[in-house]
Amino acid sequence: MATKKFRCNVCGYIHEGNAAPDTCPVCGAPASEFTEVKTEKKSWWHDKNSNAYILVYATVMVVIVAAVLAVAALSLKSRQDANSLNEKKEAILASLGAVGQPYDEYISAYAVDAQGRRIESVSADDALQLLFDLKKAEAAATYPVFEATDGRVVLPVSGTGLWGPIWGYVALEKDMNTVVGAVFGHQGETPGLGAEIATEKYQQKFIGKTIFDGDRFVSITLRKGGAQDPAHEVDAITGGTKTSDGVTAMLQTSLGHYLPLLEARRAERSDAETPSDEDGQTL
Amino acid sequence: MSNKSVKYLTGPFSANNPVIVQILGICSALAVTVQLKPAIVMALSVTVVTAFANLVMSLLRNGVPSRIRIIIQLVVIAALVILVDQVLKAYVFEISKQLSVYVGLIITNCIVMGRVEAFALANKPWPAFLDGIGNGLGYGLILVIVAFFRELLGSGTLLGFRIISESWYIGEGGWYSNCGLMLFPPMALIIVGCIIWVHRSQNKDLQEK
Image (cartoon, helix red, strand yellow):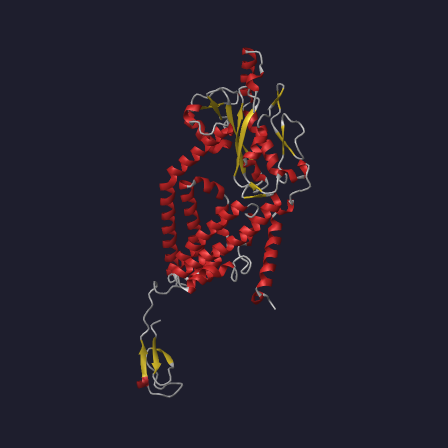
């Protein structure tokens, strides 16, 4: 290990050993022509390809990056949460066609269980929070409902499209049957095809549809090739069949969760008054 | 700016275009060009990320161990993208919603890494930054051209505005029908191919003998 290096001043030959050789094997110069080459022992932080340098570099790099990202995520979290909460509120108002109304005064939020009974332990804020993981809330039989002051209700729905989750809000008239409006969102459906469900133009097709056929729950179907039943069907998206099927299944399942509530309300109404056209009218 | 700086910036528009000459970033060029709007948003995001990834890697270039440089590049690019995504989510929520999945696509975009590897590691920060902007815009140029044709012929709209009158459509009693093929990724490849064809025929020095 401790070998020294000696360079021949005449020809440049480098000898390795503890002392200079008697004569240079290349040019024959005597030992006096040799000088020791002081190799500076390279410290690991100078040798960029040493393992120690690479390990330390990678570690420092990762720690710095992690710290930057953590600080950014923590400091921006409250703003981001406020934004996404606001988005939910706006979507709820949009489904009612009431964009610009003050949410807090206009909407009362609560949750119902599988029998349609109101769950008292869920506050209005909790009901909004349930929207962030609606699948989990539905699995736990906690179904959030957003009721406008005029008696119309917004029911959140969630399902699966072609590439990922899809979700939406369906607003029902006071008769708990006629659709006032629907808003859909998606994470990554194909632009121009499945993603069309998120366009206002497509969502308008749902307005005025009814989810009950007499007393039977039929939901709304997205029919490939064009709607045949004008009351309960909507044209599917051309080239977006999988997404359309996803929406159909989502409406069927998610609205189905609210059936006890809807049927109870419908029964209340037909008991209380003779059916009139007044409330069922939509644009 | 000196002539040289201008060259870093404008070279990637035509003679050294990342998509049609270097053939980088084809994957995302297929994915986001169905409509003009996501194409533009994607082009701008890639420009920002390429420019700053180039800048950061150029500043680090003397310290990066060459054996793990690709991983370091990946960390820098991914961190930048996440940072941009977080800031967008907090301050311009609408834009971040439009970007949604495309943010992830930026990290995998070959142009970002290609330019860092080929240019930033061997050049000073300012030229590297300009090179990043130039390549991002060169990429965007092709994206916009492809998206223009795909949205116009596939949906009859541009940026969501109707260009081809509703009354022309067969369903409305007209004679016109959208080209459904335009909505599918292979059509983007064919359009890119056509652009390369036209471009090569105009630039004799790029033609392979």
